[in-house]
Length: 123
Image 1 (tube, helix red, strand yellow):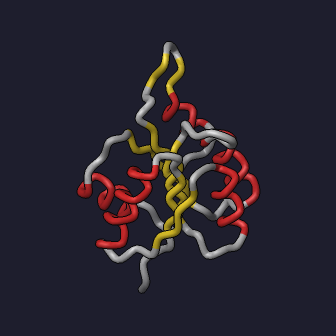
Image 2 (cartoon, helix red, strand yellow):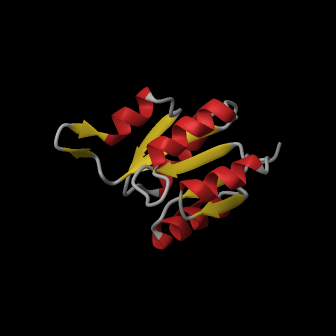
């Protein structure tokens, strides 16, 4: 059985490339997007099974993208990522869970943490 295709959507180029390297090393086919608008376009093209989505991005931020993906493409599993954590009283990853994220992943994260999370997901 082949590994699910993963889309990494993050405005930070180093984060995108690092995540891609970890995923490809583990045998996952990977696509990349710089923001939510590009992520939606790639999901529309099909064959994306897991979306790793940064919450804080320009143009179309992660929570808005999450809601649209879950509404239009309910079979796509979404892993919400954020280094923002909590700002004031707002918990970004908690909000992502309430809006339908299948899992959350605080940044920075390591290879073992990422692989464990992906094994738990069932596309």
